[in-house]
Length: 125
Image 1 (cartoon, rainbow, N blue to C red):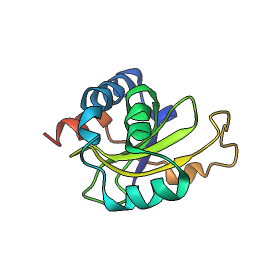
Image 2: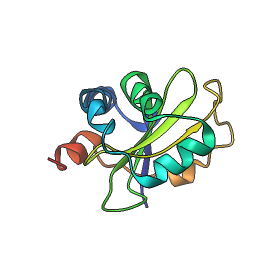
Image 3: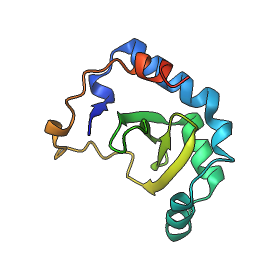
Image 4: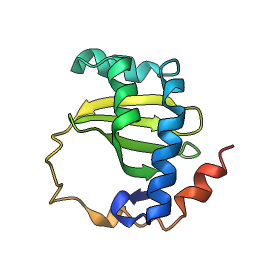
């Protein structure tokens, strides 16, 4: 289980991952997993909400908690948070988190991944 927070990414990694997700966001419209639909109905979100967050939100972290899946967490200005599998742009889940939340109690010990996000994503192709 490895995670990299956006604060640990350099400008090139941030730019690349945001561009990759935004470029491929439309694919997510047709590739959400059943878990997404379960959570979305419970939390009153739609696939349209998720795709909009992917197109306009910012990456919070990249992780491989479900290796070999490489996933990104994206949060938009409204607080819509979407986890997407970067290989196929499958939307995994959606939830709300206050966009003003600065996560003061975040456990930084979980964020030790030093991998280059650009190389990781390029390796998916």
